[in-house]
Image: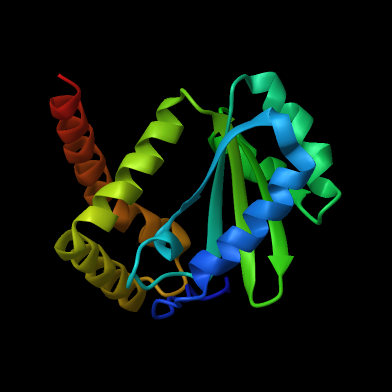
Length: 176
C-alpha cells in the first residue's frame, strides 16, 4: 500500500522556510537563474496542503537547467529522473529538510509550465474565495482517495485547468 496523502492546515512558517531555502539556492546557482518562486499550496496564505515546499526556478535556456543539477546536489538536492519523464521540459529535484520536504523544478522562464504555475498561484492569492473552494476540493478528495495519489491529482486537474484558463484570460485583458 502506498503512503497516505497528508494535508496540513496552513503553516505561517512555510513562506519563511521558502525564503531561507531561496537564499541557499541563489548562492549556488547565481547567474544561472532568472527568477525563483514559491508555488503550490504552501505558497497560498491560509491554504492547507501537503507539507512540501514547491520551488520553481526559471532559467533563460534549457542548457542552464542542466548546469543547475550538480550545483544543487552540493546543497542536498537529489535529481529525480522518474519525475522528469512526465514533464521533459523541467528538471525535478527533491530535498528532505528539517520540518519539510522540498520539491524543486527548473524550467525555461518563458515556458508554458512557468506561466501556468505562476498564474494559478497568483490567482489563488488574489481570490481567497477561490482558494477556499480549492482547499475544500482537496480535503474532499483526500477523504475519497487517501491512498491513491493519481486519483487525487486527477480530481484536482479540472479545477486547476479552469483557474489557469481564467487567470490567463484576465492577464491578457490587462495586457491590451
